[in-house]
Length: 171
Image 1 (cartoon, rainbow, N blue to C red):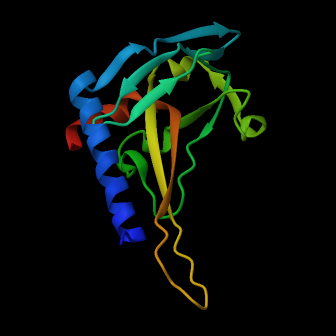
Image 2 (cartoon, helix red, strand yellow):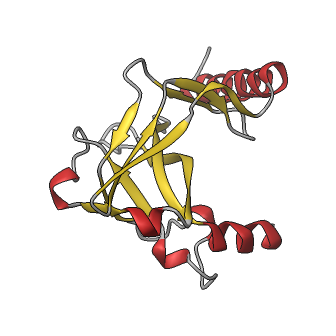
Image 3 (cartoon, rainbow, N blue to C red):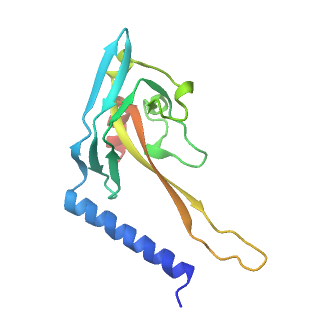
């Protein structure tokens, strides 16, 4: 008899194999597209990323659809409690990481325009964020583990090159 634990293990194994196959077959990095461009007007910048496909070092796919991505606003990177992407610490520039916002982003109205002069000293990073939420729910009759819900999102970040240099030295 298959239990929830068996099926969860099978799913995890197949996901791992899929990511390994993707990383070894396509290689890691940009497979096609994902070209970044910046247009400037009056000290403000608009950053665009063309449609394309990339693979992370862990084998996760990064896909920017047919319309591409176009951001004219940004906000400081919001980090959830107990979650530190990109090894955020006291490294030079870590607090200056910005999230690019397109008009469909839920926080678009809270964003500020992108400063063209600052953007020239930064690089665009596509960051795959995986947030796991346990689905374990206890009822009077059962406390079975129902697995985890994994929310995968590609965050488009504007990162100071000084921070990337420090990160590269640290890793």
